[in-house]
Amino acid sequence: MGLRWARGARRGQNTLQFLIEAVLLGLFGGPAGAAPGVVAVLGYAAVQEWPAIVPPAWIVAGPAVSVLAGTVAGLYPALRAGRMSPTGALRSA
Image 1 (cartoon, rainbow, N blue to C red):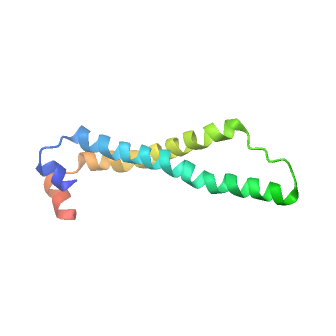
Image 2: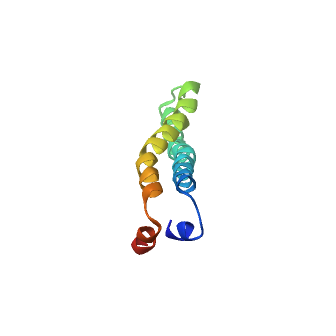
């Protein structure tokens, strides 16, 4: 952050960068975590000779919830980074 401040980045740009990072972590992290769960469900159902059922709504809801959680979790750090002074950001790095 300190380097971005020193190079002329504005508060809104730093805040936006943090929010974008949080949303992307949720977008890619949610499905990456859900995939092993789906594989485990399908594998267990195959071993038990049960029909494997993964509701399509859960496939859509999982990434949506992870993006929401990432956004909410990243909001406070993003706002805090946006308010940080350039010298303070360089000093803490």
